[in-house]
Image 1 (tube, rainbow, N blue to C red):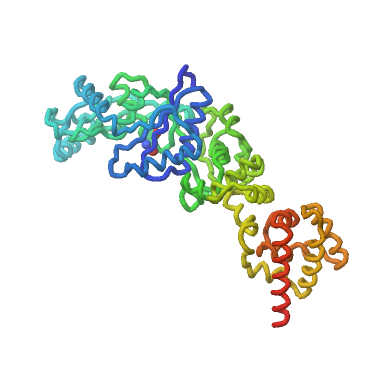
Image 2: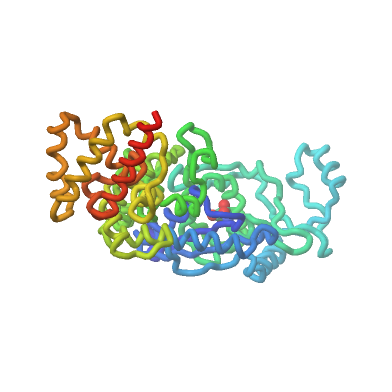
Length: 459
Ligand code: GLU
């Protein structure tokens, strides 16, 4: 990108949620605009009126906001630009670069039978408003897309018929609208998915017919799943909303999506957004399909989660859980921060601090043995005497029991864990006891001891 004032655009069709591929396209445009100090225009390609409902548009804006990708102009409705499209169409008709074609299918068939192609068929020029408008395609030569990522890609003009740019009712077709909008919005760089490469020659022909300078193009290789197939639902979270709901952080998603096809060989490199902005160049995007692997995103997300300042972390957890961000949640977050890779993983780790222990039969059966009641009773006695009730004192209060009973730590701490949380997974046991508090901890341990003696009496 070399122009003085680069102008980029993200141009989603509001056909539903913003998917991961679209989010990466949005991010690359945003990074390029921010890196260059240019502008990002958000254009909603809503000419398909049936699918372009307000709710779909809102979903896209919502996803952009969650990803913290801001735009400088827009959202501009493509459908709202119908007058500009009509004016451009009028100019092409006037110059003769386009013509109304009222030919019937039969006329065209007859022409094709004679010439082997409909190329060159000019139909019966007519002013009749019901006739579709076609752009005259040169009979020879080629149209070359100078793609920033793939290099020059050339398309022989003979592979196109004079193509329709407007329907009989005056509404324009997709490739026409895109070309006009890019030109009139002063877009200097079009960065979009590879699936649009084949549209580009048509857009270039429209631009040339109108005497507009073409923008630079960069077509991004598509995303695949780890199995090498085109990315789909079966590869995990498919939309930005699903990523949010699964407890990913926007910064981690930006990091991971940025590395899908750009940057380093290692797509799990931790890169704060400022660094992405500083280093990102569209020209450095690779040519081959990038692999979206949710496990890598999860791992990166865990790194971001661990490095967040506690207050920020607590606020994110509170938002995700719809809870208040109070002192207890903060204490809970402090002990869970090391362990969770997503916001979703936090609640199962800290739930015991807010609710009675869960009833996990498997965990219970695994750690509660014949002699466990005696161990727990001794642990309760030790815990009653610990002062203050903080992790270090709890540890030194419990440690002597290991020697006394000649057991490994797990034989003591796992039953305590299951007694206070119900589950065999929790934050560190000393921290967990301390945050739970002495009274509730002793209560839960004594409930477990009773349950054990009841079951041994049964047996
Ligand atoms: N509206 C198109 C899409 O959502 C993108 C068009 C473009 O970027 O030129 O796939």
